[in-house]
Length: 270
Image: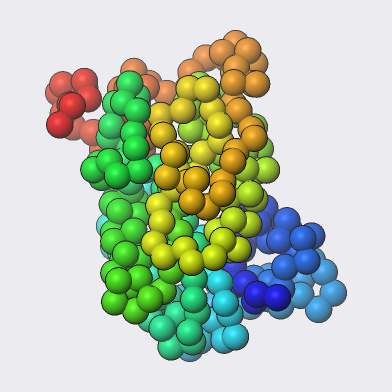
């Protein structure tokens, strides 16, 4: 059985993954940041600490085959915070993977790496990056780091560009960006277990009728999403769209609107 480590286990998606992976009988080590985790099963392997510290990373990765890296700042924040949590810590994680012979990392990338595309665009996995802020920029950088460590050190990575991963769609944008929990777990399961992965990027999205993203490249993982945000469309469309007029034009939604100073709010095609 593979030994799997999960960072960010106290976060929104980390809590979902931790519970589901334990229920599936995965040999899991769960890690949080500054606060200790309370075990949710007897004898659970839990730890906490600052991933910018090599000694913490060594405790995390000792004996690990696959790391699911969900830790880091997940909202738009000032650049110094983004650099510390999403760049510096990520380098420590990959260097730790080198030291401990971790063969694979599942990296939580984000749709915000391409958030400045207009909502009318249908994107393939090889589209150019268009980050919608420092957070999205950090995910663009993280994908590049993952590529580097595969090419130079043979550490496999699946970069999952997570859309809106919530229990069910609650607003108009989610009809395009939703990743249901069942599909999330399928993606994680395939990312852990598919053989000879190399370096892959996939859209973390369900089979949404209105999806912005063409996920044909995920076929190599064997990912076959079964959920569709359109099942909730009537409920969602009965609500007012919470995004303002500018945010509604960009795939990144409210992240694209943050610190937006252009006078012309219409998305540029290039």
